[in-house]
Amino acid sequence: EVQLVQSGAEVKKPGESLRISCKGSGYSFTSYWISWVRQMPGKGLEWMGRIDPSDSYTNYSPSFQGHVTISADKSISTAYLHWSSLKASDTAMYYCARGGSGYDPLDYWGQGTLVTVSS
Amino acid sequence: EIVLTQSPGTLSLSPGERATLSCRASQSVRGSYLAWYQQKPGRAPRLLIYGPSSRATGIPDRFSGSGSGTDFTLTISRLEPEDFAVYYCQQYDSSPLYTFGQGTKLEIK
Image (tube, rainbow over all chains, first blue to last red):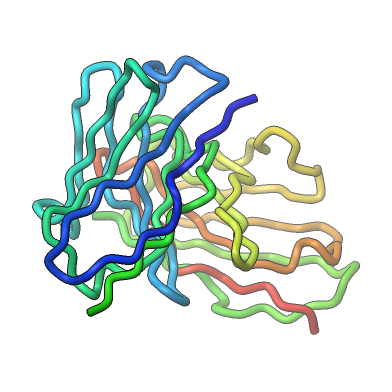
């Protein structure tokens, strides 16, 4: 069974750093890209960027370029989303999803990680 | 960037009725690389339809997708109580940039 399991909810202060994770199982982790999707409270879905776990090649939406970093450790089948300096506006639910090669939809999703940034 | 516009914003129907949701793209979606997702409150989105008429694994056949170019449709033939949710379309043509529509909320009338 394909599963993406994300790390737990986080509460952080503005300016702090954060890394959340997404562990894949039940499939060959290096055969599928991983995308990250943001959902702000009460709002829609926004695609943030993607990574090819086989070589850690990444692409970002212009809206998120420079503000987050996507990485992966294929040895432990885990992708990451990292912020070096959080803002209150980063408060949102973040989902990882399998897919993002440009030819495939997002077919399996993690359960989401809620990030709250507040002073 | 391809912009997707979904209509209507909210659709109020009763169980047993037919639902038709629209997704219009600002430019042609190459290869009909368009997908539909369902999201229920407090849950992650779930892939329903892709490509644009193939059902994902485990999706009942009352869900169907159609369209090409700039106009796409998700149809739910007979609404079940569990179908009331928010639906998003997404294009995966404009690599490396995927985009979602703003969503259609399907609510019980």
